Image 1 (spheres, helix red, strand yellow):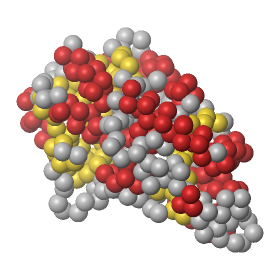
Image 2 (cartoon, helix red, strand yellow; image 1 turned 180 degrees about the vertical axis):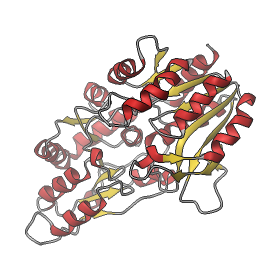
Image 3 (cartoon, helix red, strand yellow; image 1 turned 135 degrees about the vertical axis):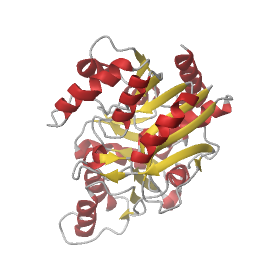
Length: 375
């Protein structure tokens, strides 16, 4: 089967986050099963030479440019991608669009519908009930139509399913599909003695709440002087505030040297970077199904997440980490308890590795995709 997978943006620092990781993981797993899969999308940050493959998956990338300033990823466009797909799409059996309310994936899906080319949509929680002033006219003009025209619309959680129905109607052909993560042959060590690290690896965006991580670290740094607290990821609006907060400590004017923001890293390096940590913390709220948490668990790291994260039920059920409310007090108590009890942290890491392998392994995801494409 020939499959074309489309994403909004690929860049060296992985700024578009989970949807790209999901698309590449899916493509690699499908290719392992013998399918011919190409990932296409917009690109920026690479210079003139755009990459032609990632993780062994062929890429077809085109320069992305901002045509609506101040709207972030939603304002990007890729005219070259649109032209190429109009020529190439008929050569594929199905087009898998990782869709959002943007000017890349929605117009593309709209053209596929008009051309009669079968496509499926996966929205990653990005098409929801929105109060943004641009959402209503965009939904009326395009979003509802492309949702209705999709052969399948994949959803992650019950909440996303309801959001999609609220936007597109009850007639949508909906199908559950969880995110998956490849098995890792390099597990992290949760017992590193004087090299213990608590890690935040995500975009420094308001929803990810990196400032909550920094405040937690500042509260704990005096009690755990041998523990480092590290943020890794691109700046998506909170970088200046994080830098300022780290530099001013808890308000006393003293810097805490074991708290640092390393900046972004290439997506292919994230698993290796995670494997050097001891605990993974993601304080974000209303996070549908974070790939970073799945990747951390696959490496044997205990995780600390909030109760509005889509993975919270699985983490609680299996004891793969700690689930807290959105207060810094709860976050601090959870991380402190793991730092004080390394054996408990280790057991949680083992449970997370088993969970990621047994419930979120890529072979099962590839089989589910193949079934959906063929049906």
